[in-house]
Image 1: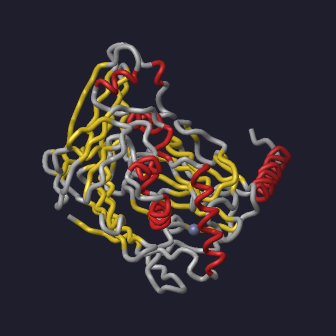
Image 2: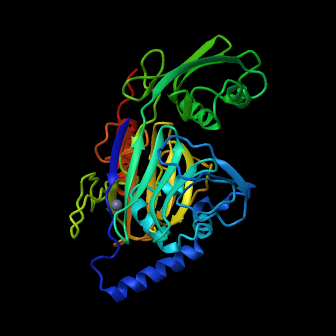
Length: 430
Ligand SMILES: [Zn+2]
């Protein structure tokens, strides 16, 4: 097991006078009341799982009770998230107060773990009954990943992410295609996300609609286990599509990129900058950044580009939109997954131009930049994640390419025109 502290305490408005602090706090409550917290949009379910007094982190056997009743007042309890739940609803039923929730959201800003909660994930609360205070909250995503918020004082929580490496097991599969490729792939145990990734990997080589009965899909998928429990994390390491007499391949190499049988890269290149041209950077990626006032570690997980509001923000590669959200601190933000390994996050936007589930291609405008959430001025906060970990988008060793700015593109086209004219004006050798 590897334990990794992502960020320490975050200080809310410590440098402001109390009156302002109070005003800011009230306005943030207002914002929160308007923006129902994200687990919100899911339909309602029937049951709630509860567990008394679990001391350790090993899985307790949950006790089920009817839904929509207030959760009993108890020291420790576990709650399994149901469809239709909102974080504020759960906190309301626990009588924990919106102020506590605001403090958790504040400490979660760097990672936005609360935003990724799904039905079936578990929340584990440690409550001091006398003081009626939440001391600790654990988000149990799966056996390989938990996030723990621990109270340090009356206003702040620390944030800690617990990662279990577990073991990866290879699962080979092979299937004959009858009907749609999609159904054949799902039949071979792949997820819709895997199918999207395969279609992206092969998009310039195969017309998936032209596949015929008897064509085959061969694959190996790596799947993560902690003990005997699957974590849900997977990675395609080999994909071959046999189309008639043709065999088309993509294999994952050590460098994290896909290559065909001949060693030709099949992985898309990424844009280094999620913007046209070479924009100015106002704040660099820095996992060890210290808060100037408190001196506590407060990582900066992305790169900041100062931009006029309304600047088009671009998809760094071909991928699928997995999140379009509005967060009290992160503002309007968009997450794009390029593969099971790579994803990017774009914060403080003024206007998303895409919706969840939409396919996007490299260079496509996915949003307009803004100044939403807690932001010191109009800018884009841009994160690039590899295997769920933020990396420096400006220096990560990735297959990268830069998109030309309009100005560069005009100059380039002018040169191309000049070359063409020069060629056309030259003597035709026979
Ligand atoms: Zn930033």
